[in-house]
Amino acid sequence: MRGRYILPAMPLAATWLKPTSKGLYCEPGDFYIDPAWPAPRAVITHGHGDHARANNKHVLGTPETLAIMQDRFGDAAGGSLQALTYGEAVELGGVRVRLVPAGHVLGSAQVVLEHQGTRIVVSGDYKRRPDPTCPPFEPQPCDVFVTEATFGLPVFRHPPDAQEIGRLLHSLRLFPERCHVVGVYALGKCQRLLALLRRAGYAEPVFIHGALQSMCAVYERFGVALGPLLPASGALRGDLAGRLVLAPPSAISDLWSRRLPDPVIAMASGWMRVKQRAKQRGVELPLVSSDHADWDELTGTMAELGADEIWVTHGAEEALIREASLKGLKARGLSLAGFEDEAE
Image (cartoon, rainbow, N blue to C red; front, side, top):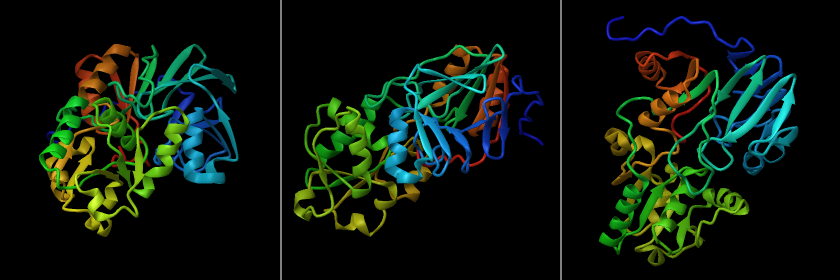
């Protein structure tokens, strides 16, 4: 087809890790990584809903990820939960499994698999820029690197965090009579935005929607300081003038936000780079802030690791595969189902 890059047909270097309709399956270890529906044994990279699902029989993850799953799913977090701290190793069916930081959200991990002289690293979701709420991504030399591609297009080059936080603080000063409500995802974006605001010197209480409260409590339980927080529900309209309110993206455009005094509608997301998305959501102040690697971080990580093969999944697979091929790297797409690009 004209203008379309055809993916190269290439055998999988490590036949013991296989892409299936349920997700990546490690045959000798008999476990899935981030299965799309309940599995007998699951290794979970992080707590977002498109990677961590309820009702797996046995779940292995970092202590933080397991706590997030328990907060979200209660008893359905898993029949049994096995915590593995960063750097600790466990043997599953002759496969050595380690979890190392991915820099995405609290508890996020790359899964390092070693079997029959081959090392495969499954990145899960990751980013390379510093984040005050979680340990940074740790590059792992490997034979096969499985990378996400959420922002795998050259148009996605995220600006510095300080720049976007500065824009938000400038707007607060510019409109002291208006309430600023920022749409943020409950896990990761909310807490990172709070931590960046505190780092920038914003010490005022931040009002938060009820749907964000429990996850903020999980972060604070693991030692992530978020500063003074107040519930937005029950706050008097006059008390919110000139204040900052954080809410889920769904709340900023429904009846809930209409009780706020002349709100400036903002949204923090990597997708705010796309002006049409901001316009569709009625966003007045788009903040380009992402918990995923951008184009430069994705391509830079592939080059840095120098893996024999790159497997690309959930996102703009074709563009990243083509870029890898142009740089002399072997790459192929996995086209795994069940991963979303919105909750980033």
